Image (spheres, one colour):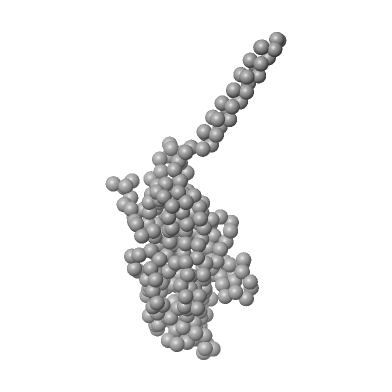
Amino acid sequence: MNKKNKFRTLLLGASAGILAVACTEKEETPGFAQSEISILATIDTGDENAGARTNNLIYGNFEISDIKVSIDNVKLILRGTNENSNKPSIVQIRENSPKVLTLIEDGVIYEPIIATAMAYDGVYGKLDFDLVQAENVPEDDDIYGLSVFVKASWLGIPAQVYIDLEDQVNIQFNQGIEVAGAQDLYLTLYLDTLLEGVDPSLVSDGNGDGLVEVGPNDEDGNGEAYDAIIANLENSLNLKNGEFKEDKSKK
């Protein structure tokens, strides 16, 4: 083979290689629009504004001073994705990295960030996450070994509510949340809904030790109050961005 033919063969081979790489990159990068979102946690009391603040942490006979929640495996799920578009329907926000969220501490309300991630633009209708027992904190931390810890007072007596449940929480939105640009989303705990139906007659300092305990083992004889709180937990959570969108896929 002469030099001219060798050069032509090498050139054709190089061109084929470049074309193959270009095709592979095109296949691996579909080009769906994405936006950076941050998911934060907060509390609310039924106000329509995301992250609404209140100085009133008294609900019935509970005056709340501290709340911690331990979560993991946070997923945001698109609504109405076309199966033929190859557009992923699930955005993994946080996985295999448990995090303790301090929502209230010593009566001060916080907005801890859960994670920041890129999300495909579209309308989202569901958020899933796992409640997990906190093990990534010091053993003397109030939430160690628990998934939810609440410190309060009950009719002036120190009180604690603790949950050791490990389970997936599924939050469906009556109206979808549209992602079409960078924004903050709030995983919001409605305290009034969480404590709804907890009758004062269901709670007492059963053993008279000066601490009211509401937990999974019928502490102080407050098992009915604990069951009511567990029943309310999923309904007391929502995801908000202050701008809810209609679910166009159901029209």
